[in-house]
Image (cartoon, rainbow, N blue to C red):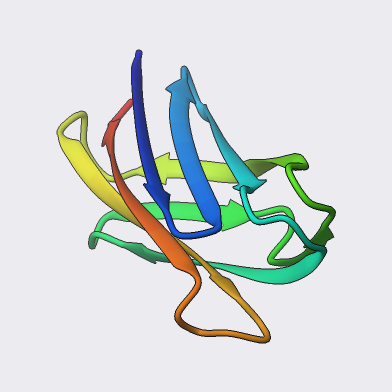
Length: 103
């Protein structure tokens, strides 16, 4: 079980693997409402789908995004890169790399 976290200016992202489920937490750490886009880059051999990629968060609100369809070609470890970015201001972003254990 692994958990990683990154905090940047006005948005933070955390990710955790629990068996075949990956949970991503995005928090608007700014003091106003904002709309965010969540994207992913996956290492070859890893398949994973985000249940949501665009969402609005009030100031200090946290949203949990689940994933679906986690598949790996082997039992090795894979890296998944997740980035959250403000739609209105691309300078507001945070990213994280989560090491995912294959099954």
